[in-house]
Image (tube, rainbow, N blue to C red; front, side, top):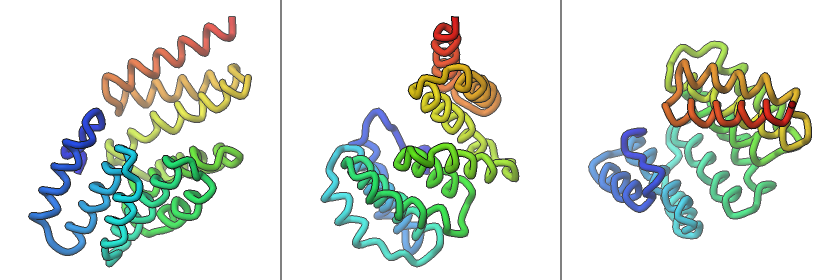
Length: 194
């Protein structure tokens, strides 16, 4: 599914996912439709995205997790974070690929800032048993987001090790862009400590 995404062009992503869904059947089709919904949400077409999710048959734990995750994202993107939380919790509770569990916990940390530290901690705990590099890449975002939360709360000294961990994860599992962003965050945090 990753190869169908181009987060800089949501309309093109939507078209690719629609085409792939038209060629798929059963749970595979439904899983692809959740990503059509996601692309619609990222285009701020929330009603269209929600209506599409209503047509998806949550027949497997993976599809149930993806439907819950995308419903949560729609609420969160529309400025209704409190309404998103139960959906993210439901997605995180499904017995699915750790990638989706960590995605849901990552979204909980965003939607529920009062418990962000705990949600991030749970996500990092899930990653302790993972060997898949694609899933381990979540360490970059988790440490980065925790770092920014601490930094924005006026605690750059506590943010520093999080930014360092984000850079280490980016250098090991991340993209060139993630490495660049992690270095920039670390530099900004170090500058604030001078």
